[in-house]
Length: 276
Ligand code: HPA
Image 1: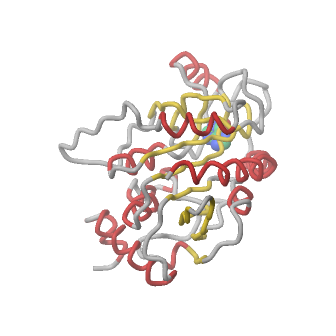
Image 2: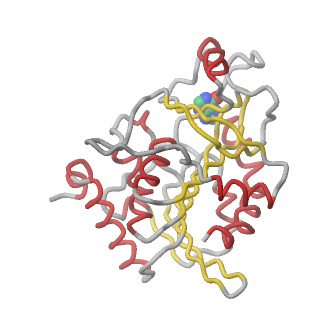
């Protein structure tokens, strides 16, 4: 069966196949932690050091070429050594989004592949709009919880998965010990590709939301359902629609992401050894 057919008919088998191919190509049989780098987060990956392996994601079964500017579509492996610990980090530069219209399976294929490759922790990063007026552009915010306005789940069938501690309290507290300025917020998943209207942002604020973006939530659910611990970090790249009166554009999102990413990379490198 082709990798794409398998992705839709048996997504976990497709992820197992991709993990096996990754192990074969890289010569690294097992990874410990996965990081998904969203728009503008490539600089954060660079701060992790020199990769020991890199390939185009679409060379692995079930992955497709990137559709978004600011997403390079590479998969990298890093060896992070500290205090006698050797941690293998699997890094995805870019992701597939629901707004690409391919369904939810390609959206979560990366994190499922990472878990099948051995990852026990999944760090999901993204660029987002700030709904909370206390946030400023360029500020990283830990995701404390989410609201799914797409209502799209990567799971089907009678598997009733608890999401009470979806964004691991343990990992959030390690991150806040490393950087006490980190705020926490509630992330709304919006399908896109349209940004929100000002009225929709007002509704989200009333619902208790702080951040809005077009990713992360399906991946968090898929990783958690497979037993991985999840950290979500949003980088506020713009004030959400209607807050400043300015129009939203993707170039602004990429530029703000780039400016803050290397600081976030340094923080991630410092904290990763404590997460495993
Ligand atoms: N809305 C939705 N997604 C986003 C935004 C936004 O304002 N900024 C970056 N990604």
